Length: 218
Image (cartoon, rainbow, N blue to C red; front, side, top):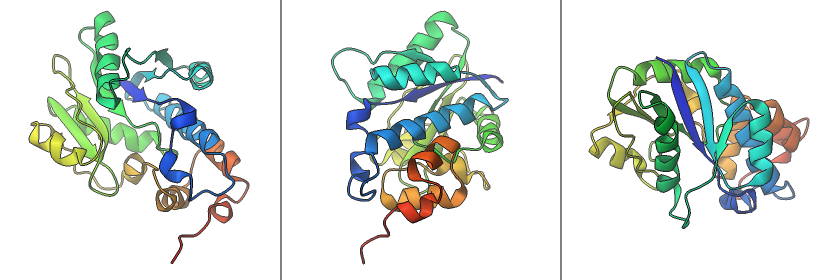
């Protein structure tokens, strides 16, 4: 099954606010863009992915992601939030290809491995709707809907429980850490760096990115 991924990205000036205290002098907006570029680049290299649609109103991010080969669509009017943006992206995809298999993917997976993403999507194809929990076991990094099924995203906060309650099947694979490792905090970023991040994230963080991220305050 070939998938279209819908990736949400808020304007870079507002992205990754929880990283502000953790990264010191590192530019938060540049990190957010690097995360998104490394995520989308890896997703496009996955053999299970047909194309990637990024939902964003940020012109810089939109241009750079389009240069990688992603399609971009603007967020729906009215500032209705993440779930509305994801539903809008899925609707846009299926307006042109009603039979598309659609999955959402977080934009902050800088350590993403194409092979691991492919394993997750192959598993998702076994169920009408399926999701992958984040590394913390609280949120969700991927939600998938096979052809004919509504995506029905319920992200933000404790989305793992909400997606499970909605009837989506949880994907319980081992060895897919890069697909689970989203980055919201300094600890998340250190964990992603330990996995091995993409070239753009590494470039923003420096030649030795692990040395550039301040350790947690104890």
